[in-house]
Length: 134
Image 1 (tube, rainbow, N blue to C red):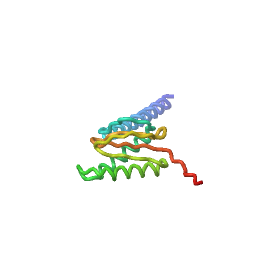
Image 2 (image 1 turned 90 degrees about the vertical axis):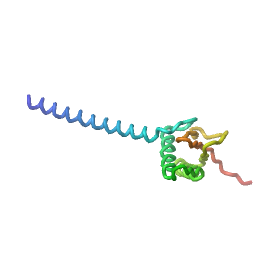
Image 3 (image 1 turned 90 degrees about the horizontal axis):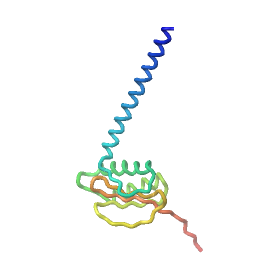
């Protein structure tokens, strides 16, 4: 019976070590994600979290690919619009800049206004209805 107890304890310790490793990896990934997204500030939102995160990471990657202090707002807006049109269907609209005003109507669950550092991004979806020719 003692051999079975030792084997049970060995297996239990092994499982505990696996759980601790998994928790450690998850904590490191969470810290990395928080560090990666630390300068993001959501200003207004009506969008599911997965779509928000896609917008954040996509915009961050485009911004990092630009030369320092050389914001190409048209490039970022077009890239983000195309990404969301192809991933989530038409018709997405994107406005990017350091200072702008807006007032838009959007589809339910299709609105995100956020900033990364000093760049402001407005991403929203509108309904597309086919034209009926008479």
